[in-house]
Length: 60
Length: 311
Image 1: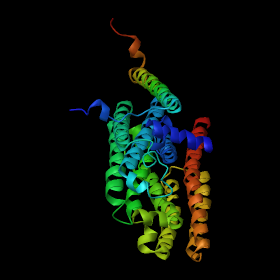
Image 2: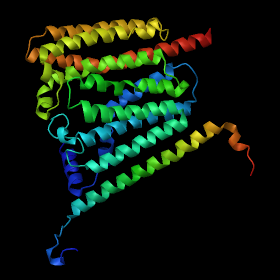
Image 3: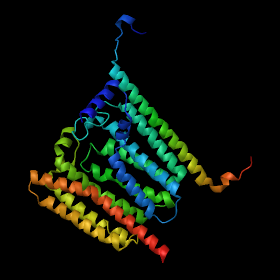
Image 4: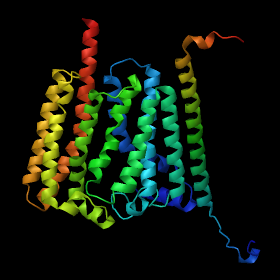
């Protein structure tokens, strides 16, 4: 059961804090994207190395 | 500096963890040692490894080391908040929560072990898993707050990376890879006790039983000297085991004698400021010492390989 609206604490975010929050989130998203891209590259390269040229000779 | 403080404050006000905070959880300075010694172990190991697989293996060992660091900071956040050296770490500074650090550490540990197993072999992966377990459970959770021998036994965790690098190449554990382990293992006590000698009030306030707080300065200085002599002797093992030639041997002798000499000067130094200055000198030298010894081993090994190819 939630508290009545008039009793809830209201947090007012200043424009500076909102801008800082957006900046931190954006940088984190970019870092996560780069990590995911690196993971794709790692698994792609690993697959090629492990399978060797056999990866190009397979039944379609 | 003012900008950094403002930036950190803003980040703390937003309650959002920054990318830099997650990176700091990995203990990058410790990670650099792990990466380098693992790389040397990987290069000097007999056998062949694809360069891409080698790169992935070193990356996995680095991430595994980082996971250990994150899990260490998760567990130790209470004492990190007390010590001046660690007060500004992401958790005690309020920039990241304990749960975030825990999840981050577990995910990285699972990822690094899994990918290392797929890329190289499961002996290396199992070894990495054991190293993370040893650092987090045996050292951080159990020994660190229990005994002044904490870093002697716990130091094994930081000594395994060259053996993991070795195992990644040929899937074996040998006397040669154990020699690399022994060098880092014997290096750890004088390195950390030198730090503890001039930061002992920090450890005392946090209730961490470091050797100077428990056994006293005199006993610690003597133990540093003994470990330094053993360390200098152990760096000659690669030469006796046929892993290195004259270049490495010369570097090991010169740097080992220097290390022992600094430990001797610390042992002879009167208490107070001179002793703390000597401890600081030894600590600073010990940082570069391990890099020099392992770099010499790497250079010597590469020279021997190129020499045999050319002849």
